[in-house]
Image (tube, rainbow, N blue to C red):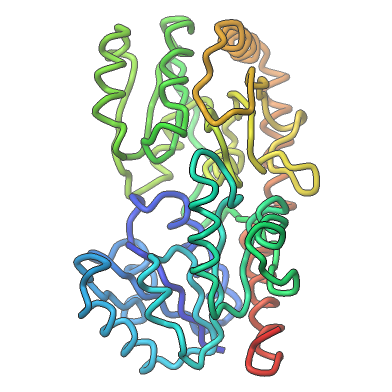
Length: 374
């Protein structure tokens, strides 16, 4: 079986979907699958170092680059894979593959109707799924809406939750001072809750600091906001990091504040690295009842005052979270229990070995259908 994984860029700047693609590649390699990767934009990074000549760089300048479209399509024809899996790909890559003989697998990383652009998301998904043989939904909530709102056959949708690969993660070392670092590894955009993090940090004891790994459009505004709140000396902006393991080695708590989360890959990685999860829980499938990532036994999450797609405005909610974190920091036995439960939970339900087997099973089943179609 030859599989091509399509990715927009070989960089952490692509967000969690990049690491989803990386985990897929590593998992399939361990199963002996002949895996190639095609990168739409930019130079090679971790995937290129992993795959060598089996990682192909299109080096497109934008979606308007017709030459990029043609190079991508010619390469796919030359490789002639059994499976083309768009794990983290741009729309033009998906469109330029229509009509090829290979089975086409799409990845859906979020529930379609999330605010405020739910209708737009649904229209885009309908277009992207044209000609797709199967769709990987990373949650039960996403799967249901692909069927009910996007009109996709239930038989085409496979639920495969994201996973953690220990190949690029190891438990963090013990800290040697009394500072405490809350950490977030997110795209720096409004809905990831960094403004909420600054509001929380202003309430925390002065030995608590915030470390943010990631880049994005909201970064300049948030740096100014941190300065206005008098927090500049307590906030560390790492920008886009190539080695996510280095980020986890710096922090004492992973701070989850996303307004919505389809899965929470950084949360799962932190759990695997024995870092306690704290924060606010609102909308999203991160705690969906069918197959949750976070539970009361493995994390400390205070309910948001509203499930609306917006920042937290209730002062009492921030105070409740502040007190919960301080109490947890004072109770090592409680903290150790959360860490133990979280690590076991991820190893049992969200391991890369399990992920690879589920992907391989999906590919194998789909190839057996006439023409790959349901």
